[in-house]
Amino acid sequence: MFKPAAFFLGLRYSRARHGNRFTRFINRFALAGILIGVAALIIVSSVMNGFEQQLKQRILGVVPQLTVTEVKSQQVSDWQQLAKRIPPLREQIGVVPQVSSAGVVQSSGQLRPVVIQGLFPDVADADVQWQPLRQHLLYGNLSALTEGSYQIVLGQALAQQLDVWPGDNIRIIAAAGGVYTPLGLMPAQRQFKVAAIVSMQSEADSHLLVMHGADAARLLRLPPEHVSALRFYFTDPFAALSAERDVQAALGDDVITQTWREQYGELFDAVSMEKRMVGLMLSLIIAVAAFNVVSALMMVIQDKRSDIAILQTMGLRRSHLYAMFMVQGATSGVLGSLVGLIIGVGIAANLNEILTTLQIDLSFTGQAGLPVLMETGQISFIVIAAIVLTLLATLYPAWRASQVLPAQALRYE
Image 1 (cartoon, one colour):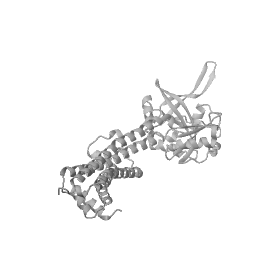
Image 2: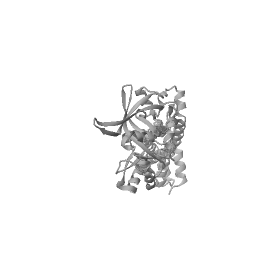
Image 3: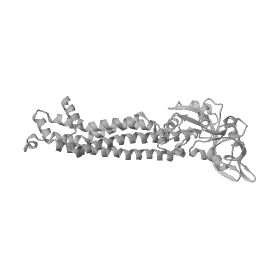
Image 4: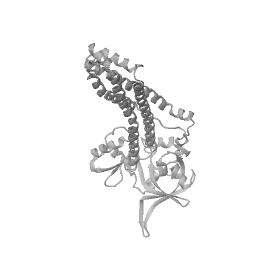
């Protein structure tokens, strides 16, 4: 049974200043390793979370997260009715009609592939699709995209490739909407005026092209009231993956669903893999520190064999010795984890200010600096894992201490 005496003796040994200097050095080194490992994991994980969150906002905020299309016509003839047939999806924040097609944009001899997106600003949940564009507007005016205006919004990278500015005219050729003539298939095409340029600061800028949905429908020669698909938005774009299964379960083979994963799955898989690998490498720091705890305790046991034997002759049971050395080893884990938590959270919260003070160039990150997103659950897991790993490291040394025989230890005393 655990007694307070074992607890206080364990704390006393962990704070002892006498004894083998090398043993004390190994013990302090283990404490520093746990501290540095926990702090580094918190800082790096928070930055990686921030980058992933930015990718979600800047890429998945302007591309379809989940689209639903009728199987028969490959279009949607009555999008309001189809929306009613789909049950409310988890984390859904909006559902809007969309007209879309692959296409090519031409300007001054330049040809670039694009994804044409026709959005409707007057539907109920329209704000959820226009908000990212307003937030990252660089030049021009989004209000110019009215029905019949034949004006468009371009991503900054695409506009630079085409060398166009708001007010310039470009020609759009759509893959869908072509008609057969005596001269062959004539693709749908029309001249549009650039109304605005947005900078999402992501890969989406190189093929982003947005226009009014009615203008896109005319370009693609869709029947009246028809749209290409229903487009769903979620608080977390990753929720679209489970929502796709819910839609398929509700409507079966009547619809075709598509998520952002078809186009950007490899990118986010790479980011997720990078997060795991970086976390694994930094976790090795804590693992090495835990092995140092084992070394330090084994050296303490060897150095204190006579003290252990005297405590046993005074009535201290083996279970108490076991608990005493577990407390001594766990002290390094708990203290290192808590100090690492304070340092890690403090540095992560003020990371950009610290880097600026150190005169590190952050121009590549934009005006906002490095993105930092601290997740309470993730930080708690890091701290608890470090403490548990240290506790596991104390099991064998504590068992060896409990096996010391007083008669043998005191034979030559």
